[in-house]
Length: 251
Image (tube, rainbow, N blue to C red):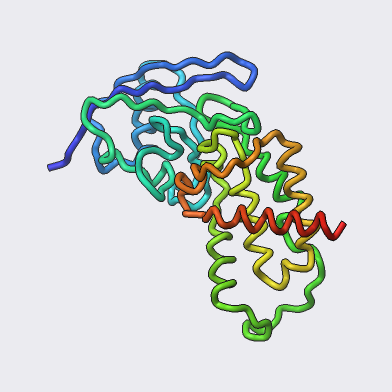
């Protein structure tokens, strides 16, 4: 027999970054505990549309924990009460019958609200554009075994590259810092020979762009690592600091 729960939702509604936002309260009943959190929001929106009310705007795409778009702050935690999952992977079995769920957008000056629960995360794209790529000519495609890379370095590079840019690290940080995101993008290139060539320029450019866009400073509280759905390690921030200081000393 299917388990269902009844819930009270306190949802943030806001008509753009310049408008004053407010919480609105809704009731949803007979929600299957097998539903994902986004499916529950779909049901809420069907209910609102049937009542001739404006549906809640929220971001989503793949619903497979890959794209990072499902950025919701749920009961005080980025992506909700489960660990190592994105919002689209969160299931309603994590909530209790009769519970009140508070749903908010990411809270960061660098992520202005577009509408309701959708924020503008293009700041991350601008940081990547500042240096998160390899632009130098590395010749033709080499044989996989022609460039010796240790297993440890390869594994660390791949772990860092698993960052999906969802912004949970920024939302979790009391300072709104983007250091975990930036350090992951710097690390996955810094660990590989093709990325080392532009290592100094990359570290300086991406940190400068991060500061320019209004992200806060890192104070190593570790909240970013705890809430990251892809388990990006805090050690990447130490590597970014080394890369940045080394680049400054070279100058």
